[in-house]
Image (cartoon, rainbow, N blue to C red; front, side, top):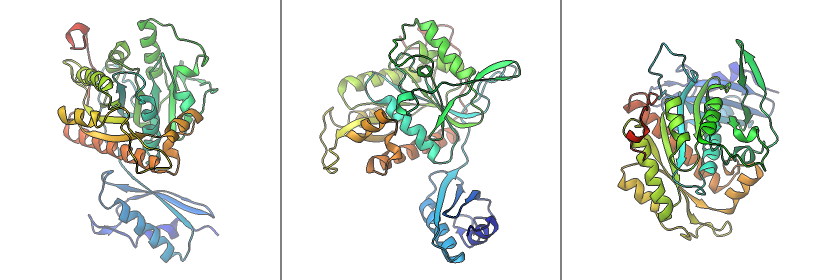
Length: 376
């Protein structure tokens, strides 16, 4: 027999939040209670995502429900927090682009083949698993891979007309709203586009997508530092950028160019941190073994040199590749790798919160002379 929300709330009133010395119900920390015959689930709202009492509070909630309701029903507690805002449109008289989006995060890499799209996919799902509202734009117009990684290759977005304007409804899976050029072309077709066509396509995905309210919008950029990158920072105020690289010297050298681009005069997008992908090879059957195929700590050393956070080091393991190919990203599995991606997500959220607390909201970039912005 299912319990009532009132019974669950009474049980949770027995749990006090140490920082306030009041019960979590009175503090308004309990949200979105869902009850079935098999499970009681709810969100536990913390002042900040990396609150030190998160684990102990989740345990206390489960114990309170078991004790007060005298049941062994499954209790699922989702620890979450209010998402801060890290962007602003500097011209109020103009129509705001993506008005319902709190944070726009660019995911970039200096060169191709470093696993940038794999990192973006797992981060997007990781953010959604925290209860956040998440969107994803596959801006890698020459090599769109998100439809395959999410297992939605055959999907085709529909058009919804609102106030005499057509909007593209994103495809949604794993709690992530997503748009990609890959939804509009055949997987085997090559996109032979000039720069203007590619940038126009990106602007369309941004401005004509029916995104609604989002806590985070991730933009998976193509490798390098080109037209797409400049279009993005001119089209929307980017909260911050994440740069992905392998530890290999050649990849690290190109990652430096990515850092320079975002830090360049007239662009000045905060860099939230670096991700070292394929940091070492670990066989599934020998999880303690590490083989440094692409070099050791190349990105970690780069982060130290440029005074940037290292968000995480992700090993090269077969299951990550298999999950990407099968449309079941690694973060969805019950494995050590899934835990690593969850840690990576937590580190990113913490960096976003720190950035929004310490820095002014990002504005759109206005570039009239690209030769003067330090990218050439």
